[in-house]
Image 1 (cartoon, helix red, strand yellow):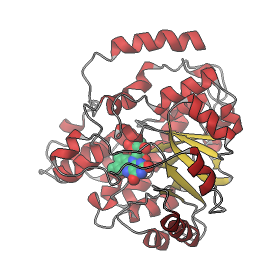
Image 2 (image 1 turned 180 degrees about the vertical axis):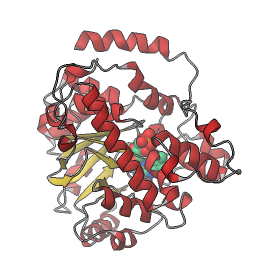
Image 3 (image 1 turned 90 degrees about the vertical axis):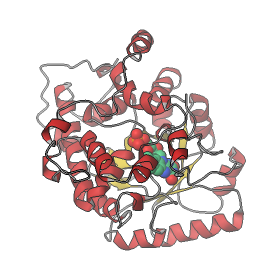
Length: 375
Ligand SMILES: Cc1cc2nc3c(=O)[nH]c(=O)nc-3n(C[C@H](O)[C@H](O)[C@H](O)COP(=O)(O)O)c2cc1C
């Protein structure tokens, strides 16, 4: 396994020289050529998650779309997040009974039941894509029975978001924290009151992101100050709430191991969608590093990951490495342009793709997937 990953990394460097396509050509432009400028294609004619990006790009104002689309600096990490999945291939097994694969989609995330091993990553400013802000994300997640992680810089407040949740809907609340105990306690109390089941502490943004594309339109990061984020702070935060605190933005095997030592219940591998520091590896590559150097981490705590996931096969590859649940940011923000129906449809599309891609890879049960299917 190790050697095939190494040789494919070399092959990947060669492939990376090809021109980058933000939206792979699957005929979207020809098919929707009769649409008026800015007109949204009918939702039922979209065929995959990249279509939501294409639709949103045509519909949203350039400024608002730029906030969603933007990556740091020359956007190498943004592109790499998308391209990395093509540098690691699937090795389909045949003669396997895969007919029950759909029944194996449901999973638990920190003990809570969901219908699929993917979730909606925390993204600020849902109002840029829809006048109702995050309403469609909350309601879509409920309809599709998947986890939603609202961002602290969502357009709606924590309390507003709670009003759109169904009675038994589980959400995890993302936060940025600056070490000010009074402010932190206030946020923790609001989260507890809103019935969120976990706190997702983003630790990959200790400084402003270097965002060139966004700077042109004045739509930079919602969290732009230098912030003191240390293990001491994490240990202290745990004394301030009973809720589990997940760390989002782990990018090395050493930090993953340190998280185990500090009793972190779950880590979330992410380079913030390539928005913070250009040149940082994708979460998929970090998961490979953990798989190679410290595979025990995947059973010592729950590992989530996001960045560049657009197809069912991407989810399958992440799960194969031991990732428990896979997040998607931009695809759901673009789907939310259509509101609840758009987010619901995006979830259904991805569930279907995960199931058929896993089945075609010869996986009978997603809970028993292992690395032999990817190299
Ligand atoms: C528009 C936008 C806003 C984001 N805002 C936040 C945020 O407030 N907090 C955070 O932890 N991550 C934020 N992220 C990063 C996402 O949580 C996630 O890591 C990333 O979008 C995953 O990459 P993907 O968009 O390719 O799926 C944001 C991403 C986008 C696209």
